Length: 454
Image (cartoon, rainbow, N blue to C red; front, top):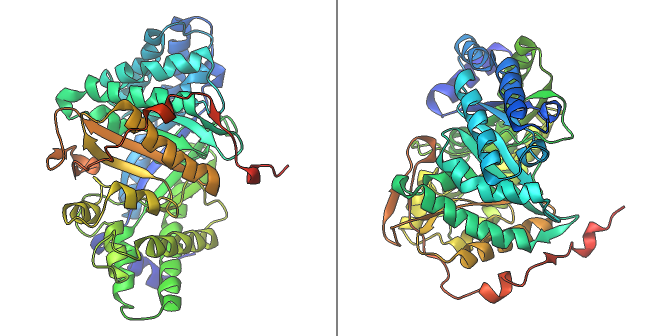
């Protein structure tokens, strides 16, 4: 139960400190839609999504209005389409037909994005999975609301380097296919290691096969709230710092739980998890980088940054699990560049490089996120960056990801504008030395020794 003091405190977080529920994500299983006929399959997919999700947007808007809590996005995640389309899809164009169907369904129910145009190929690729991966450039360039993800590795299986090499090509092809829009397609494509089945945040969201037929997952975010709380304890020791973050994360998670339970009850769909991820936006005062600076760093990227981020991530998780028995997804701190004005400022000041960001991903919730690089970056260099990031996830038994945008026609020193929550970004330099002979070897990097825990 909330007392009157907590209500007033929550109102202040919303009105002055950018607290919001970033997304209500409805997970929908499409396994019962599978059919060997592509026309029938697309009809089944469209009908199920538009039936199950018909009240999602209205319910989210009603809850937001009644409780006074901003709910920024309403989203859908579906069963990885490589599995759903395996029987019916014989060409890449068959998979694109499914993408167009998903996009049509998303528009019909009014959601912002639909995730799950995905393949899980950590150990190997089926013919259907390879077809879906090769279809991604066309799918993302011909749709508006589709989000795509590909899992390339895990702690249990190692890293599929054949798929890593292929994704270097696919990312570059996606950039070329959407070059007239600053290679925007790549903002909707992420590669992963150890992805959770219940992540509500895009572009990595898909409805895992371990999930119920439909499920409500909520992602709540409040970097501004954490920064404001830390402003009140400037100069205090780390014990006070940690307690402040933990208590604040607890309060933020309770807001997410309130919205999640209400959405679950009104829609008649089971509640899954609350994902407490400090996901920034380009808005001033809504920055993870600013939290790090409030801890005492001149800029994100300064010595001490990785330690500060590790502390932040850990305390956020500790506060969250005390507020809900069902904290899931990623839950921690995101460090996207284009979506965080503080990160952008750090890049512009020369404090933050891709290499430092990679070090930070060892202790944050995801990985190299929303990073714009020169459009002439080699495909194999992109594959090498992916391999490095996946190795961090594999060895550390955590989720890592790469969402990188080679902006065709632009180079270091230029900027790219994506708009909305995606923000804008400076083009960051990449290491010029070649890794082609490494990524072209093919095969798999085996699982680490500590994966054998059966």
